[in-house]
Image 1 (tube, rainbow, N blue to C red):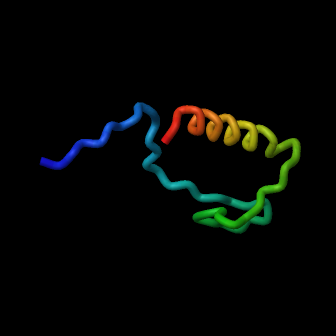
Image 2 (tube, one colour; image 1 turned 180 degrees about the vertical axis):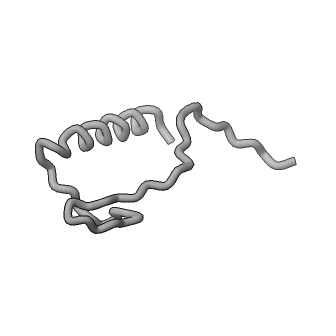
Image 3 (tube, rainbow, N blue to C red; image 1 turned 90 degrees about the horizontal axis):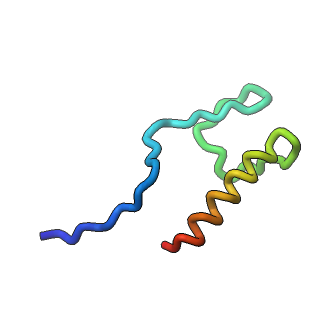
Length: 60
C-alpha cells in the first residue's frame, strides 16, 4: 500500500492567471519579469514577503 503524505491545511489554487501589462501585452507568466517597486506595487511585495516568512517559519 502506498505511503500517504500528510497534507497541510490551506488554499490550493486551481485557476489560471493571465497577466495584462500596462502596455496591453498579455502574458501567461511573468517569470523573469521584474516588477518595479512603487506605491502601486508595494502592497503586493509586502503580502508576498509575509507569505514567504510564514512558510519559512512553518518548515518544509
